Picture 1 (cartoon, rainbow, N blue to C red):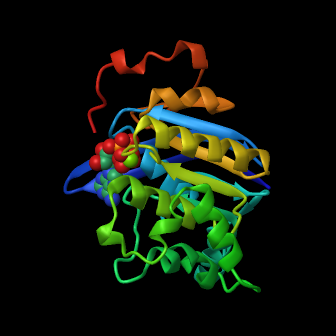
Picture 2 (cartoon, protein in one colour):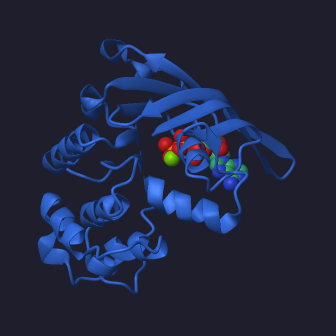
Length: 236
Ligand SMILES: Nc1ncnc2c1ncn2[C@@H]1O[C@H](COP(=O)(O)OP(=O)(O)OP(=O)(O)O)[C@@H](O)[C@H]1O
Ligand SMILES: [Mg+2]
């Protein structure tokens, strides 16, 4: 399985103002690769992940899965593919407040109408993320870091081909950040491509490749040479 982002751009309209959130971005992520994107707030990182996941349509360019576009497919087919191929940890986490942790994390399985039973996989993920004790709790009783781990488990329930992770360690302490990053390394070794957006420079050593996003443009960086905190802030 290979994801190809080919010359993708996204223009938003806010009132009379046009915002070119993503500009001519090209990138590939193959099975088993761990790719990181860093960049200032407003530089277009979440927009790029939402384009890849199919939640937004690009203004220009193409997003291909094994050479095929999801966009051309009918809505339900695209949604089915998304739930099968892609695990998405959105920045806002998006847990449903009226479902328990256990039900939240099995939801993508039921949405993609899989054969079989997700329970064993769900227990395995609870264990790997250290949240077995939260199984029957509701999201509003969890800390930010705990919610984050539930949203990571949920993104992995269907053993996706690609995991899109939008600042997955932003509210975690260093110990839990380490747990998540090691988990991402493990699942990439198990064959899942990982595309992680982050502000946390302590995590980029784990990635195979690191890109920087700046004013909507994506540039490949040498990991040893990352000094973006000294650059000027992006101006939205
Ligand atoms: N639906 C939208 N309509 C209009 N403008 C938008 C929309 N979504 C995002 N933008 C704008 O696009 C730009 C990029 O936003 P995006 O959320 O991709 O940034 P980001 O790099 O993820 O930032 P952060 O690190 O703060 O999460 C910003 O200027 C934002 O205000
Ligand atoms: Mg963002």
